[in-house]
Amino acid sequence: MTPIEVNVERTAGDEGGGRRHPNTCPSCRSHFRDDELRHSLRVCAQCGHHFAVGAMERIEQMLDPGSFVEIGSELRAADPLAFVDLKPYTDRLLDAELATGLGDSLVAGSGKIVGRPAAVAVMDFAFMGGSMGSVMGERFCLAADLAVARRIPLISVTASGGARMQENILALMQMAKTVGAVDSLREIGVPYISVLAHPTTGGVIASFASLGDVVVAEPGALLSFAGPRVVEQTTGEKTAPDFGRSESNLRLGQLDAVVPRRELRGELAKLLVLFSPAEDEPTGDNEPLPQTGSDENPVDRVLGMFGLGRKRG
Amino acid sequence: MRTPSIACLACLDWGESVVRVSDEVRRLRKRFEARAEESQIWDAVQLARHPDRPYTLDYVERLFSDAFELRGDRAFSDDEALITMLARYHGQTVVAIGHQKGRDLAERTRRMFGMPHPEGYRKAIRAVELAERFGYPILTFVDTPGAYPGVKAEERGQAGMIARSVLAFCQASVPIVATVIGEGGSGGALAIAVADRVQMQENAIYSVISPEGCAAILWKDAGQAKKAAFAFRPTARACLDLGVIDTIVDEPSGGAHADLDASARLLDTALRQSLAEAEAIPPAQRRAMRRAKFRAMGVWGVADEPTNQDF
Image (cartoon, rainbow over all chains, first blue to last red; front, side):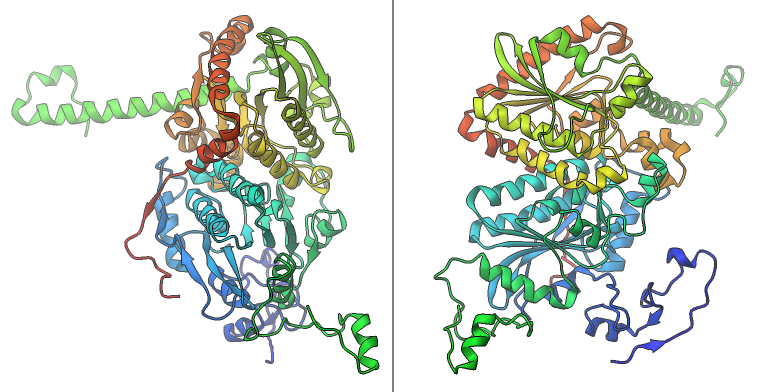
């Protein structure tokens, strides 16, 4: 695919990204057609910037085609506080549903990755900033229930500004509720893999998203409890440009890996293999694990030179 | 419609006007009630933050004997915004965990106004593990504007440590009672508030964000805090109605700061009752029951036609 170079006129306030076309790369300003972006997993072909991915598209990218079965799709947010700010909460919900086609900020279900089953919970930042309310919490718990019932790993992909203020205290309680769901996985030894996408902040990173047995993040994602603006406004401290980014979190020991989106499916497949029992081998009709080429085991390479080979797996 | 004055009431055509007047009265009464609730919510916000309001140590002094403070997270430092201790409560040893704001400026600075860093939560986890080893009940006192939102706190893993603290409270098999005694501010409060019984003092507040923070984001003006507080109702009454807390603990008239000893006595009565209830749960079931208690929290509806069913 060829990216189309466009000259985007710089205007005051443009740096904030507020007026940028959603398909224009904020870091190198290359512009793409939507089908090009979809094909490149919404990664900028010029500079590698990771664009936001909707929940359904993420599921397409991650899971074997046709393997996804959704659960809890019928759940919709109620408005227990009859909350109105500049707009009623119910209007915001309606707008978000019309814009994304989703009932709330998380899609739950099950599917397969290279033939291995997993429960999945995938968030969508476009639905009210990926905020965590009652429905999001319940759907995450449904995915965890499914993982417990079938004893299959749970994979979550998060993108969230935090708890949903319009549900106030009930939104806060979703932190306890989702952590409880992770506890139910831990109690019986079901693996939980947490993938953090840009941004994962507030109540979501301060609850289930940080509790994966393995926690990985996409490059350049903002992963912090408080965002840089809140830190600066509240404490008067200056934040560095790499504040809270995946790469700094990796350096500071808060993550296991930073995984580019193109390698995510392969890395998840590898983890599902590693977390499976020794005798549980994939059947012959599964496609082989994606190889990353240079990562070939040196022992295998040496054996190969002598025309020998070890039996894989 | 203009409210008719008494003078002109006499000369009205009563048949229609009585209806109109009573409509007007009903509307006014509704507005007064709304105003009353609004001012009551704002009273609670101010009382919960009152500089003389009793803090965790004030209750520790009055409720416990032989208190011994457990300090340090055994990894980095001792966070004085969150205190943990071993203490005797009505003849049995308990582990007490609470946020601690300071009284004067020096102490407030030292205790970061009750806003813990990750070390504070690591210390809390240490205290939960200790309680678990010896089977001591855990009593927590929640009073924080929130976890400290600073660069260093972030670098040392604030979010992850809050998550791990919530998890530690989920996993404990000993009885836990949490009481919100002032400000229950967001994740920094919840980190020590997952319990078998959750209580809130009458004028305490518990919310996902401060009214100022909510106003700044949703109204784009922190000055609209009063409006925000009214919209998201952080009061004990609202929390009880939504099933988030189990008990409202009375305060002396005028608020907890009006009479510290009386507040402590009222808290003691409620605490004994809640602890007895938590202790009555069979230990083997406590973890699952606590999980189920929080699982039930949330309100939602069901759509007729799922929008993405055909994906």
